[in-house]
Amino acid sequence: MQPIIVTDAVGNAYIRQQMSDKCIRSIPSAAMADYQDLSDFERGVIIGARAMGHRISDVAIKFGFSRTIISQVYREYRISGKTSNFRHRCGRKKTLKELDH
Image (cartoon, rainbow, N blue to C red; front, side, top):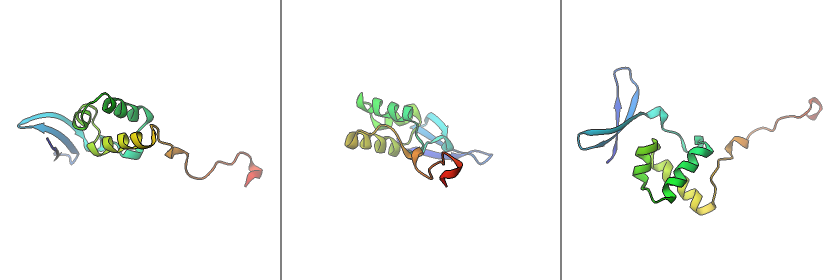
């Protein structure tokens, strides 16, 4: 069961999950989250579903994440125990006072 990318008349790309001739789910490809853009809640959903024994393909169909993202998040959790993304803390530090620069 491989996802199929389909483009509509307006030019929007959709990713379809299909089994034989029946479309199981169709979601906009823009809705597919990037690995770094997942919220803590979404990461928790992925980790919880995988810890309960659900297959990667089942989680991908149910929640609309790519299989690659699901495996990356769960692998990172198994190796380091990390469940959140601290990327939002990177970058230039904010100045506290005008005299700090």
